[in-house]
Length: 256
Image 1 (cartoon, rainbow, N blue to C red):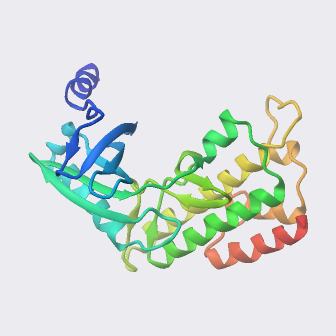
Image 2 (image 1 turned 45 degrees about the vertical axis):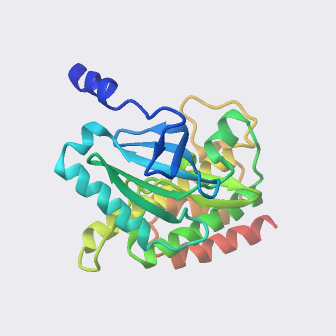
């Protein structure tokens, strides 16, 4: 374990600010370091356009399995065309190291808004944001693409418009892979419910009980409660996004 960590520190250091890749993309700052890739904010020096650049970790690039996975991620992003998902821009390899470039989405992620800025969201605001997120999931699932990492840091809001980022764990399946489709579909539905719960808790002012649940702590309409129970698998799970859309519309009506 210690050896693996040492290798990461030695070989997976982020690129320095100011480095120019492929004679075009200037590194501005490292935005994050995951277990599998490094993400940067960069500028296209030809157009002065900001982009996000992802680099496969050097230690991962030595393994054929990881290189194939990175190429699959690129292929997946190329196939997605949705206004609330960052568009694919470019890809290149330098000295055996793979990179790709995608649109930069301005705004703040929900984690930042909830836990650092302490921004409250009303029930109606939360449900309308979830409606936007469901629209993205509907598009992805229609193309048998499953995100598998719908979390508050991966959801960006800009002037009320929601965008979904980070497709590092996403996978596109074939219609024959029925069992994996079921599992991944439910994972995305659960994440949708958990995101709604985080938003709803932003207005909670009571004292959290040691073993209290959201059913005891939050005062919600029966329509919102039903939606959450089914998304989180407490009641019979949803099988299709269309059913979620129906219940979500009823929940929105119940709070307006």
